[in-house]
Image (cartoon, rainbow, N blue to C red; front, side, top):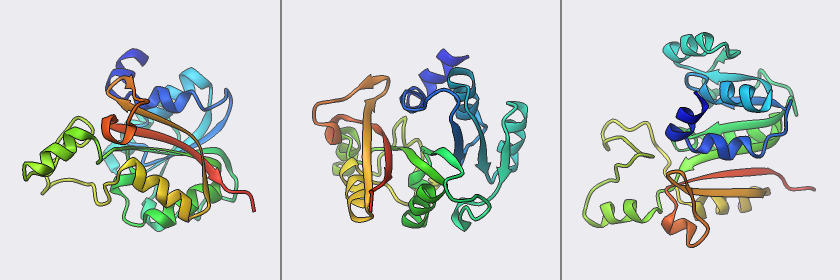
Length: 201
């Protein structure tokens, strides 16, 4: 099961490498609960998912994942400060409308945050834009008229957001498919995973 998951979602392995065994985790926009199930099997984490879709709630239950039905855009008021070791937003950042507010909530509820997102600056995306079309790729598989994505960004954009909101980036993992990208990451990476925390006062 785990090998198939990593083929479909290479960011899962990147996320798991940063999470110590037994950590408490909150997965925002958890979908069918696959990430939490993977982390439970590989890192023995304890935690919850937050999801709005009825179908995904049912899938989480089938995956034996603890899940709370809630809209991320309304905030995380149901959780106390520093309630979790890690709060994860996996391939959901680009679909959020109130990104700044959600980043603040992630770092209120979690001691650290982890996000993964498709890199709009990837060279194949840039090439499609130069040809006059919105990009369609494995990481952004939607037509312009039916996409849930509202805030696409590049690696540089996300790092600027962190810099202007006193967020310290602890680690970054850039990928193209299953391959790690180290040279010219904003050009050659199709997706990225970041680990971060609030800067010390």
